[in-house]
Structures are given as C-alpha cells and as structure tokens.
Image 1 (cartoon, rainbow, N blue to C red):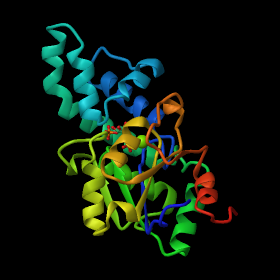
Image 2 (cartoon, protein in one colour; image 1 turned 90 degrees about the vertical axis):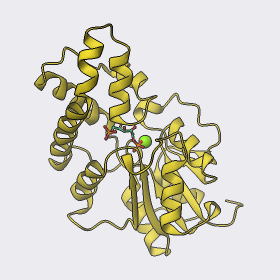
Image 3 (cartoon, rainbow, N blue to C red; image 1 turned 180 degrees about the horizontal axis):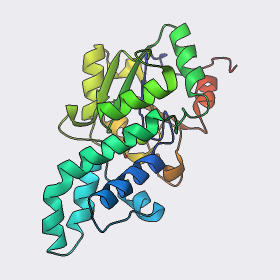
Length: 232
Ligand code: XBP
Ligand code: MG
C-alpha cells in the first residue's frame, strides 16, 4: 500500500461483514406470505433487485413494476411489510444463522491491536446491524465507534451520504479512512465520499464492476496482507 496508511476502517455490513442477503431474501418472502401478498423473490430476481439499495426502496421498485390495481394496493403497505421483514430477519440472525465472513473477526482484532478506529456504513437498518453484531460478538461487545445505518441519511448508496456521515462523526478526513465493501454500489458510495475502498465481492455481487476500488480481493484475510499485516 503506497498511500499514507489509514487510521480507520469503515465496514459495510450486508455481504461484507457477513453473507446476509439470502436471509434478507427469505425474510422478504416470508413477510409477503404472512401478509397475503402474492409475490416471491427468486435468487435471480433478488440478484437484480439488489441494484436498488434499501429494503423499502427495493419493495417500491418491485411494486411499481406491477400493473394496477396490484401496484396501487401494495405501495401503501411498504412500511408495514418492511417492518415485518425486519422483525423476521432479526429473529433469524439472532438464531445464529449467519456468521461473519472468513477473516472478518481477525481483521477487526488486527485493526484494534494497531490502534485503528472502526466504524460501520450500511444501507440496512440499525436493528439489523445490532442483531448481526450481537449474534457474532455478544451483546454490547462490539468495537465500532460509529454505526451509520439506513435512514440516518437522505440518500442511500451509491450516494456518498452514509460515508460522509460516518467520516463527520469520526472527525476524520477521507484520506484517513479505508472502506471495505462487497458491491458496486458500495464501492461507488465510498469513492464518491473520497474514501479508498477495497472490495471483497459477496456471492450476489461476484460479477459486479468494481471500478474505483483500490483492490478487489477474496476476503478480509487478503486485506490484512494488503495492509502488510501478518495473517494469523
Ligand atoms: C445492503 C442493502 C440492504 C439489504 C436489506 O446494505 O442494500 O438494503 O439488502 O436490508 P449494505 P434492509 O450492503 O449497505 O450493508 O431491508 O434493512 O434495507
Ligand atoms: Mg453490502
């Protein structure tokens, strides 16, 4: 790494900390079934819908593609549907069904050992972040100084808002941070905020265009190698 070494790591959540999107997809489908909504998101359809970040925005994109009267009947149901989905997703995560990705725990520990500040910048909700951190690190035991999540900003990824919000809370300049992302929207968001970003593509994002990423690597262990940290 030829640049000035960063002082903070800012992690994306879904697809980066953990492979969560299959659990999100299952929660959306269960919420549809429980609400009597005649919809089912297959892996293929969900992979395309992931181009839209934010569950509520994703639902609005999908429902607006339907014909009236279904479209007009379903659009007002988005807040309740998404709240139901978030409850279902949180229950599944708290049941321990989604571990951190390979190397994430080691990267976090190595960063802490080296005095790095840690933060999160994600499109998902704060409740979902809390559930994932509790399931993998224990209740109240996470090392993230700032958690920027969901609707705390006006515009979701690929807009830079969430990264600019987290930088502001950390009182750091963009050049002092390094972001870790799994998707093209995430890389674009960090880049737009002026932050260098390493991509660790997730299952749904393998074919994405990671233009603008400092590097595209297999997992968090490869990030430690990139930073010159010995991999345990
Ligand atoms: C990924 C997203 C989120 C999740 C679903 O977030 O775009 O919308 O797919 O979670 P990130 P919600 O990669 O930025 O962590 O339904 O809570 O949005
Ligand atoms: Mg992601």
